[in-house]
Image (tube, rainbow, N blue to C red):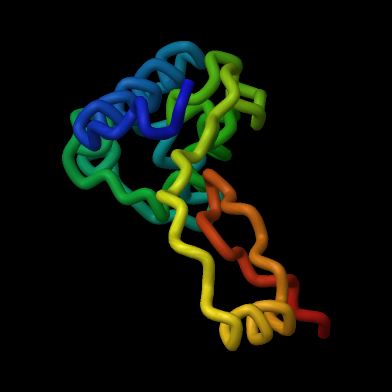
Length: 136
C-alpha cells in the first residue's frame, strides 16, 4: 500500500470516525464512559462532542493520542493502518511517493551540500525532517 494510494481526505476522515465508534462498541462502552476515560487522560469533553466525533464533525487530530488511550488502542489503529487495535506497525508497508529528481547542483552548491547535515528520512506519522532530540 502506498501512502499516495490513500489520498482522499474524506475517506481518511470517515475511516477514523468509523474506527472510533467501532472500538467503543467492541469494548462495550457508552459514550459517557469514554468521556470519563478522556477526562482521566486530561481531555475534558462532553457526550455531545464525542457523538460529533463519531459522526464525522469536529474531528481534531490533536485529540487522537487521548482518544487512543481512552479506547485502549493505538493511533495507527484509529487511522485505519492496522486491524490490530494494539499494533503500532501498519499491516502493509507504506511508502512515501518519491519526489521528482532535480538537475545536479552547480559546483558551488556541491561544496555547501558537503558541509550541510544529512537529511533525515521522512516519518509517515511525524512528517519530514523531524529534529533531533534536544539535550537538557
